[in-house]
Length: 177
Image (cartoon, rainbow, N blue to C red; front, top):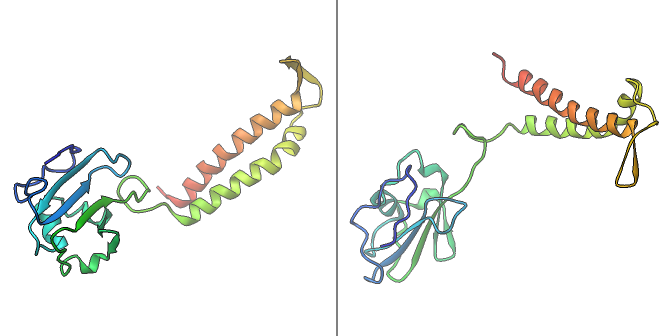
């Protein structure tokens, strides 16, 4: 049995038989971004998907992030307690990244739309705002044989500031104290 386990996952229990012992081959990825971090083994035929997950010691809090395949077929979560893979099949159990950080689910779709709108506004408004606050067309300096104008510098500064201010505003509107 090969074990490369992240600290958040317990070691797989001895219910898994050594590789090649017959039965159902099992591969559990412990990191969705690294195929090398996995647990492999074999379980007796007749075990359900739920039995395999429980035998692996995967914590209940970790289970909503899992996807299960028997050979090439995805097994819906509702069927985990009923599907009993036959000997010779391969069961793959993988965590699927869900995003959002902090374990609370995904990002707010409204926040994502608003942030995209801020980025578009920053791109469109940078020139006029830079001109309005006094950045002119004069040459500021020459770099690599090209003249860099004060307007170009102003656009870059304004295009960098608008998204920061917009993100702070979006966060403040969405997350009241």
